[in-house]
Length: 638
Image 1 (cartoon, rainbow, N blue to C red):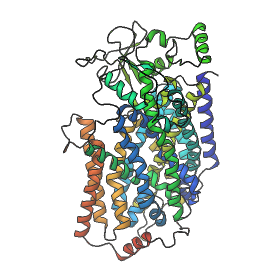
Image 2: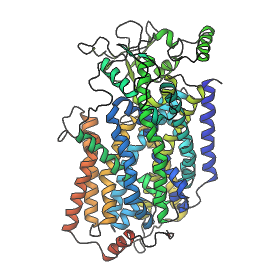
Image 3: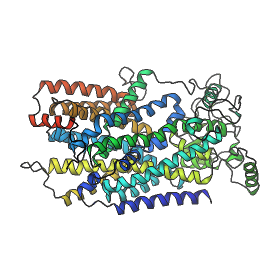
């Protein structure tokens, strides 16, 4: 079956499944909409949490980071998985015992303050919209390549699908949809990885292949790398030959920057509101810890495969693109070409470099996510150190002598002493998506990864949008603006609040779509910023709320305000205003500022709380009851 037909079949079937589940699990109450009625099985909740967590950044972009950064990319692996240990041990069971709907709910009640609740809502909106921008961008990237539409149209299509099951089903619909999405994304991630591992190393398990040896000899443009060379050694040698300053297994980032980024990602994971709310959906306190353990297990399947996928992707780029004749490689297949390919396949030969096998390259070119500039005029593709041209590819609409899409960008000169200049720019967000095509894997595998990429992006986008809508409808409208001062409860009826939640979700989807069309960075970079914001704002305020009875509303408000503001301003100044380092403090990277701001949050909150009145006794008693595991096996009423 043709590739495009398979893609429509796989993606269409998965979408039908998600929408069908949303209709089946339609939310009938605010409890259903916010926390799925609080009755989700911990194993299923662990699976839904894993899907909620393994976003477009994990599925689409993380292997691209590892592929392009090498060792430096492992900070993301350590931080994002380590954060779940913090979550399971320090937060999940205590928040479940508290038994509310949202993180601002906890902050508002624990710190006995509508101002604290409002600041928490602001934090949720900043974090979630920053995060969801990356997800919608991921949706657009997948659609742009596999459904042959532009990225902006892809984002709009993704908005429509999320609208159906987020607005209609709420947390109940999203939970069971995410269980299905986890199954789709993990199968879609691991099967291509197994194919790649078998093809490159002969090992069935990608985790073993990552430490294995290559089964083929290949020319990296300078020398031939012999069969039997370890995968990582082959990459290191190729990097050296192609003029890269830093080998694949060494890092450019210093220990300090790596540490700050890793801690920011860990604390950010534990402070992400759309992840925390998942632990409000289980029946009992102990189920929160159990579901966190299951989530970590389900996540580890993808995260232990990811380094192998990144390494295989980088190796495949060098092996299959280097010195290929662009015109012959990317042309439409003739009957003679197809006969030659089939004969080579029967003989067990690698067909990735054969004439007409590079049509995928031309298709990605059309999507704007790969660009080739024939700098030396030889008609061949060369990969080397350095940039090919300045800025993102700006296509002129004309074709070159080899049939390539011409760009108007200024070419970057070849580094001194380097024989070959780099001519290729590959968007790091497509390493996973393009890998099966680069390696000439079967069409059904390519179609499967399209469905998986969409499942990853849509699952997290839905969770984030629900958190935004819940914070606006339940916390801001119900508990602040329309609060009954006499009872402390909302003046809104359950039906009114449910309608407000759905309207807020629809509005959030529109904003998310805009951010997906106009992203502030590549997927994983944007997501890393969201983690920095969460680490600086929510993680300290929740930890203090659970473990420090003396922490009061003044300390919490001051800490959140300082942490969020410092992180946001630092990121804006160093990423979007001037990335040359003018605004850096002690050379701290923007991705690691969340750790510094988190420490400052703790310090500010401590001193402000000690300089002001202690919390009321009933609040201190509540904190004591949350901390003590007594009654952890009992259901907690809402």
